[in-house]
Length: 344
Image 1: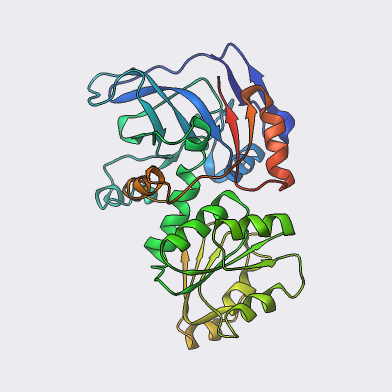
Image 2 (image 1 turned 90 degrees about the vertical axis):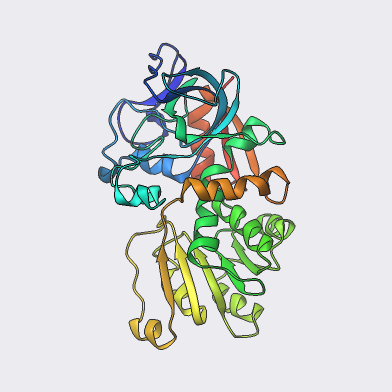
C-alpha cells in the first residue's frame, strides 16, 4: 500500500513517501479502514521529532485524525460492512482497567493514540478495533470529517466536561486560529458563552470573529493581556482555554476572575510554568489538565456536527505524497483551522 513513514526522528525531511508498504492484517474484533483523508495535528510534529514518553516504534506512520471507508472486517465484528463511511476515535484503549470501566478511556493505563503509539492515517489502510469506529457525518466531505475528531473532542472535553462552561460566562480562547482554538470558539458560542479569542494577525482575528468570537486580541501585542481584561470591563475571565504553555501560562492565571477555571492541553512554547500560589488559593481558582477526551464525548459532539451547529475548518488539503509540504505548512503557523492530507 501507499504510505508516508518516518524511519528516523527529526525534521520534515524524515517523511518518506513509499508505495510498497505491507498492508496491516485484520485480527478478530478489528476493522480495516480505507483511509480517504487524515488531518494533521501538532502531535504529529512532536512524534516526528521523537518523544521518549511515546516509545514510538520505527518505521512509523503518523496521523491521528482519520476518515474513510470500511474495507474489511475481522471475525466477530457486527454492525459494520464494506463501504461504510467512518471516522475514528483516536485512542485505542484496553477496555479492562478501572479507567476504561468508568468510561474514562482517555486515561487508560494502556492507552495508545493512533498515529503516536501505533500506526496512523498517513496510509491507504489502517486497522483499529471495532469500538474506534463512528459513522461519518454525511454532510461532511472526507477532508472535513478528518478535521474534527481530535480537536473538537479535546475542546469539548476542556470546556464542557472539565471547565463546566456556563451560558453568559466569559471565556478566553488562546490561539483561536488553530484547529483546537477554532473548535473551542464554536463550542463556547454553542454553550452561550461570551468569547475573547487571540490570534497573530488581523486576517486571523477576522476569521475568529466570523466563527462567533465577541472580542479579538492580537497576542503579538505586548499589552495583549490588558486588551483581554478591557473586554470584560476589568473583571477578568471565568474560563481560560490554554494550549500554548510556558509563554502565557502565568498571565492566563492572572486573567482569571474569582472562581475562574483554566483548562490546558498543550505546551508548545515550553513545559515549565511559574505562577503565584497565593493568587490561586485566595481567589479559589481551578486549573485542569486535559488529555483528548472519551468516546462518549465524541458521540455527544456528532449530532452538532450533523446539524451544522459545529463545523470543522479546513485551511488546506495536500495529497499524501505531499506530506512534507503539509508539515511545513503546519510548522509555519500560516494557516487557519486544519491542514489535511487527502489519500486517493
